Length: 466
Image (cartoon, rainbow, N blue to C red):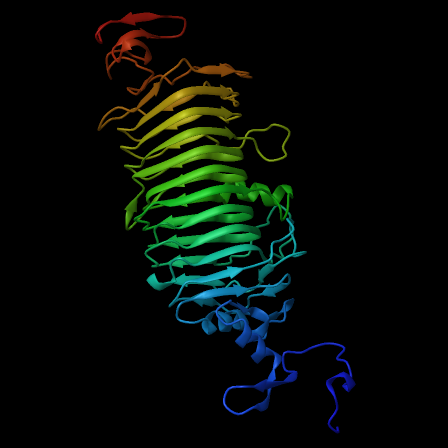
């Protein structure tokens, strides 16, 4: 083509990153050179982050964009930076790792729902991979925000339904410090977040439907924070799907965690909302939970590791079987302490619709302090179950439940006692272990008050003597 003025050149209908543009360099002698649009963008936007499309991402939900995301992360300077993801659906078919520097992975928001739609989505259909891992101390300070995640689960939603056994979608390993997750939707994900050996991890405004485990932490030696969790059946409200979760899914699992703050959380349809377990590293010795609501769950709070210690400000637990016309969930207990030497304080507690007990304390040497207790519907099998069941401690210290105010037991279809007989455990400020055949309610001291020696009888004790 002969030399033409720029105004005489044909207009481009569309632009490609490989298109070539002329430019004039003025350093030294004047020279006209050529550069691709991709090269120009990289020069102009240097230190302003990178875009996944510059590394070959297609974003059609079909092509594997994992290598493009990895290349974008690797292309950032040693000081880290931002990887921008456009409002497309990116399939992650190969594992991606962030290490060596802190990276902020930024989407453009999302529309809530079960399937990819408007906004930025990451999808995965490969159960063998961990889609996104943050690894090593130099990756701490990384962030993932403003995007949605989905996995493919093709099983028929009948009574035999179970999720495809995908690995953890997000992992934070050995970062020794915080990686943050903000404004994320995980819709139809088997396992969400695993944090191990990475204190100060933070979760803010996390919502979605996660089947097996939402957030799990272990070897966290510094305070972690979780705010604004909302797990609800975004992907499917099919009865079989949600009921599978009610028997198998745990919203949040804490193993060795030296301090975690959880605030303003809601979950619907899980085996447990908060599960305190253990690992080879130990167990959780300090936790703080504020404003939590567990709906259609088997256990609102489940402590299965001895020595667990923590506080709950306000907790509501409802234990019905999902979409079953008020039927209670088999095995449901609002608060379950299933270990030894654990101590939990709860400011305000409401437990509804338990099969047998609203509170169950197994093992020995456990103490549960409750400021205000309200129980609506327990002993639903009409088996004589008590609102509070305390195991008889053959060894160790007898279990205790301390009530700061008189409990409110209401709406019971079948009447049941406050506490079970045949135990040396005590409820309220009751008398010392072994001083009476059944526990009672104290007046002023732990061993002075009223107790019920048998049906239809009422007796008193002073200083542990009848």
